[in-house]
Length: 222
Image (tube, rainbow, N blue to C red; front, side, top):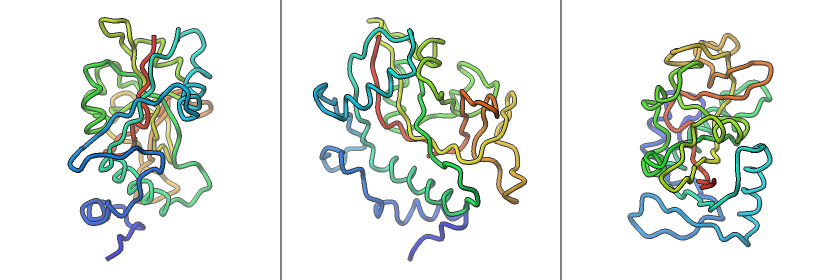
């Protein structure tokens, strides 16, 4: 039976019954049966590497010395749940605004395994700040997480940032310590999908629900 993507509460049913029907990206490498996640080291001579590196460096300014490696994060279950939530959001939208953005999330090496396996965890949001809400923070530019300590260096001086797919949808101005975005008056019965630091020119987006972001690439740099 098909999922009713027009009803937000049906996402739990969809996740339980139909996630495997969502196709995985065609550029993914093969995985062994039973593997939850696979990190694929992208060769530097491949167009995929060049494209991601260019996007990463474009807004890095002087915060990055060089890229060490770029890994593709392949987590089929997490990806399908993300795509299911995206379908729900697209179905209920009534404005021609982008549902999805490519954003950046800096982290330390201790959080990498958890993010790759289970996604971004809102319970860690207070580690750096909750100025715009108690959610997971993503930056428009790489310079912000790279240069402000969010991408903490390991013992070798290596830092890490995720290039992420994020469901920002309709957003509202964030506020300190709010647990969810405020109600959306243009869409009765729903809250805004995310919050931002500035409505006129957002630098940070905050999402509050599970499966609102997918860690597409892990970039290790200095």
